[in-house]
Image 1 (cartoon, rainbow, N blue to C red):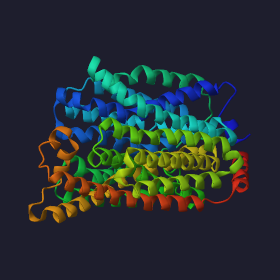
Image 2 (image 1 turned 180 degrees about the horizontal axis):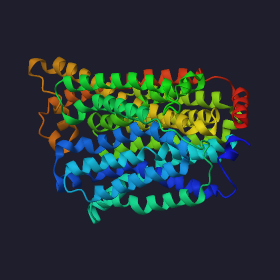
Image 3 (image 1 turned 30 degrees about the vertical axis):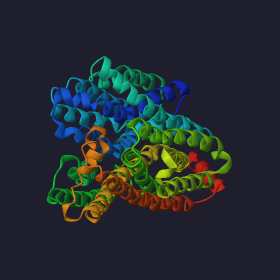
Image 4 (image 1 turned 90 degrees about the vertical axis):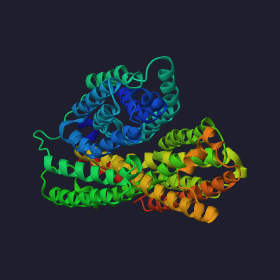
Length: 508
């Protein structure tokens, strides 16, 4: 009996389970965009603008730190109960967010949401790996990628609709009927048999990993989001993270059922795919965070136009993932992944070479190519990883891969932000000398109303400085895109070798 058969009985209704999984992923994918649109209304009602950033950071941190834990639990107890537990936490957090009486309560309930959301994407993708064969899996990954494209379009419109015609609380309460429908579909139509009869939970490893990653993410984001000017707090958090990581590695070597099996890091395919996922995460946050800023601050375009230039990335991604899925069985993992690497480099090169006279179309072209690269490469990585392990390791392997991308976006946001600020500060002093304004002047540049209050002679200098700063960021993005492409070239084997590995794993 192969791994797929052991995880699926004839009672499983794959189309209904897939639809339920896609609904669950839609909820977590739409969270960022729908809440972003509603935040002005939320702040005007609850106050607490100083905690604005933590509405997002709290959710993302708790989501990221729980991803590898949920992945391992899904291997121990089965996909269905762990997915149900995560969805229940997410829905409870959503209901409470809508009832929040101040910003502190909202941040706390968003953390509860994130605590549940960490289960959804890794287990959803693991379920797909269980239910579908190697030939089918690539195409299904294209369907899953399309969820992100739909959410990027629907989220802002839905958030604006609720704030204007109902109440901001519906931004969270809309999750309840959709989430219950997704949970019902997974619970009643997915049938499986967990591989471990008497699971042993690595509580110590889970706690060490949770605090190690949490402290690292706080160290990277606390200064930016909470306005902490002293370097002491981030440094102390980084030290705590290092100590916790050391303890975690020591624990995992001795644990009978490690929460993150270190054996995964001894497999060349895993190492290459996960390091590439980290680098791709940096590329992703670099484009997502700074391309709209360039369109608004340097080109002077509206937020709608800037958002459209970024949205085309969400079109290129699922389109490429679908094409990759259809051709992966014929081309093999290596060729499909390297195609993604080429698209990533082409997109990053377009943005690095960009000149204002190209207009927003040039930004959109770079954004589309980056999305296509992510679609080809990341879909291939997921399918390759899931094909290289058995059922009882698939959840942990999938979660580790997604976890590395999350860490990449977090580290990338901090590193690229520091690079940007350093360059902007240098340019301000070059242009204005000792009378140089501080970096908050760019807040006024990006606000159409505040921009009118700036001295007219400042505007070209500020636009040049902002363009130069983002150009530096795009140069870093290009370096990481090239690194990702080189890693895809290092992916072991061609189609035949990986097919043999799939057959060997399936026979175990």
